[in-house]
Image (cartoon, rainbow, N blue to C red; front, side):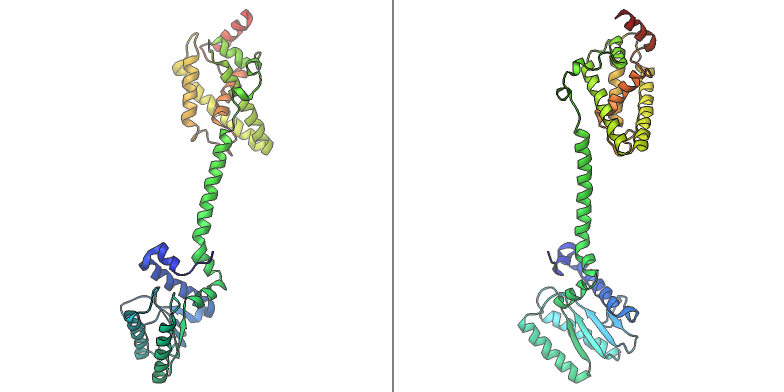
Length: 320
């Protein structure tokens, strides 16, 4: 969608749009004329010059920018006349041009033509109009149009893309396998060490733990399939971090025969750190997978849920 200068007012307000319009004109003429084009710092009584081509006191060309977006009333016409007379009285100018963001209607063009012809006869100075249509056409010949009118769209699209990627990651993390997704989960892993570790600690919600173990396996495979060395690195970091979390909880909540309190508090701590300390790598690991790494550690006999868990595990397995 093509945009005109009124977009500047909508976005920045009249005051901000006026300054931006002047900067646009300055940039455009500097691209057109190179180092011969010079902007003039705004000061009290700036001499009716926003851009000059050449050098003072006898520039080749003078551009005056007026951010008039509506119609030319008597006030706007007086401002144009005053700017021109200021330049004529101070400098020897060959050409003077008025830059406007608007396009004049028939009545305004008749006034403009009459006035500039009169001034040409009086001063010998060539007067030209650079209206909104001309300026937009020239801007499109450079990259200034895109920078002026489309950069915010690009920024907005980048913001949307970033949000979509974040949402995609959130969706990915929510794609987890639950009890209903894994056929006969109650029969899976029955002979696994982590299951015996749970049973020996009098923990009853073993099917949930099996689901977590399964999700961790899927996440490990997914991570390693993308980049083996990086995937292994991320898994090892997660294991070490989760082991450290368990160790702290173990020192506080270990019990001679009941591991429910320790397991639940370790879960709670993992949930607390899920989006900070445990946010590692490209995040193939869901919260469920991170809990499942606990059971991978238990399956390796690195952790347990009660005091002297290895001794009690051995005794439990001998009995059962």
